[in-house]
Length: 129
Image (tube, rainbow, N blue to C red; front, side, top):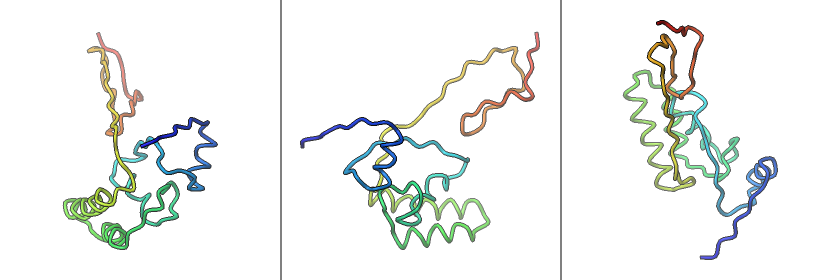
């Protein structure tokens, strides 16, 4: 397999992604909110914003619609797992790397909060001796 790597500025790279001028591209995503839908919403329609692969699947669309109709979190999670399995089966994306965050905390620091997305909130923090 011959591979040609092309490095470019982000603005140019995003233009190429939107215009589908690639065979394979690498991109990083970070959840915008603490829910699976932060990633899954991108693949609802082939022309959804940031659906660079243009992947679309009727069963996936139905599952996503159904997830909005379900109140119990366990049932919604089951529906979204089925949607995720469709993505994993068709592979419009290939997750190859996962972010980790490590924090050092001074034992005197009290009331600092770390969100599930990794944001540190010092609004109510204080230092006690």
